[in-house]
Length: 192
Image (cartoon, rainbow, N blue to C red; front, side):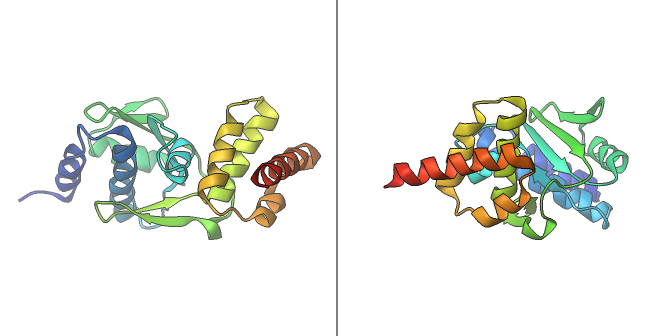
């Protein structure tokens, strides 16, 4: 009789050969279901590139999956059970060419705004809100001068109905608020 872990390994193996944009969200769903079934007190929340990919309907592509979650070591050990290889603080599944990182144990944003996304495999992926990922990209633009983030902020705005009041409530310091103000005013002018 097949163990639960072997069943999850098989589900992952079936994703081999899928395009990156389809594969990563499904891997995230299977991994989330597996980890949360083993560790009921852990909530795996997708952040980073995969959330940008999802909220821009595949216009952004990422090769890794970033989660925010507590219990880093337990998660890493569970991923190794699934066939991932430990590489420092991250795990890599060679057959699918996917890397999983857990850069933090605390969500930079609102847990109340986390969205549950249902994958094709009927798995739930907990995803940072589009507003919070917008704020993350804005901070990268402001503090690390990553100018390409402006493109992704624009795509996030175009594809999603962003709550601007919430975004402003999450921004820190005058510079972040100033850049947001310029961004939203510019967009508004272009729409007229």
